[in-house]
Image (cartoon, rainbow, N blue to C red; front, side, top):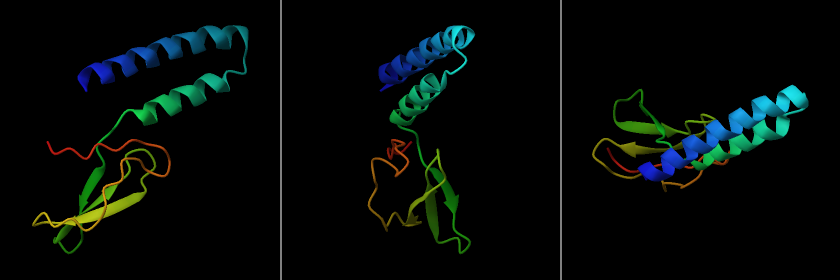
Length: 97
């Protein structure tokens, strides 16, 4: 997983460098921005976790768009299916730790 993350980070740097060069020659560089956004969403990120107002369960949200993904009871009772991707395309990493 670490090698995959390093590869994605290096690719981001290359694309951003290329975008800088492209923007000097062509001010319409939106294609590079869209490519960077799409690649960043392919890298799995942990969901944002918040404690419910009742202090009985955790609510999970997409780190990219903030969409509600589900909730889990404090006693590890799963109350939702853990989707591998959000509707916005962000990959979600559900591993503990």
